[in-house]
Every structure is written in C-alpha cells, then in structure tokens.
Image (cartoon, rainbow, N blue to C red; front, side):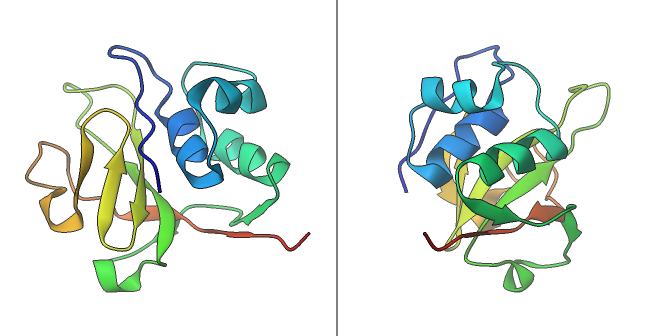
Length: 128
C-alpha cells in the first residue's frame, strides 16, 4: 500500500484513503468522488463501488484491533471543539495509513491526539 497525502488544511482524507486502497493518485480519486471536499460514509462507499469494490452498507463497530479485517477504512472522531469533521484513515495489516500524519502502528492511534476509532468500513474487491 502506498501512502497518499492530503494537502494541509484540505478535507480530502476520504479521497486519499480510497486512492490508497485502489492504487490511484489523489487527483484521480477526487474525480471518482466528484469533489475535493468533506466525504461521508455514503460517498466513500459509492466511490469504492465505482472502482469495483463491494463495500459494507454501513460502518461496523469494533472493540479491538483483532476484530478488524486485514484492510479497511477507519472513521476517527474528534471532540467538536477540536475538529468539526471526522477523519478517514486506512488500516492495513496492523498499520495506519493516515493522509495527514503518515504511516504508524495501530497501537499509536490514540497516542497521536486522535481517539481510537470504534467503527470501520469493510470492503472487498469484486472479481472481474
């Protein structure tokens, strides 16, 4: 998996995460979404579907890392006074691929200032 970075101050973390999963660049992913701005679970799911993935209908709750699939998108939430919007990151084989902070182990997720995620969006690549 290759890290795709978002520009500082931008709100395209969802597009960057889909780009990482689908092996695209940020610009191509934004084109699939039709926006460079804030994304929702629904818009992320729609983009994955357009790219040939079968994505879960909704976010799924989990309690610990062992419950996660090998690769999925995690939805991080911040206190409203810190950040109004949530943040998407990719979980891949024990590592977090964060469009704004880089790559780090899952165990450091809460340490880096973001609460641990309690929900993920699972997906699988559809056969051609």
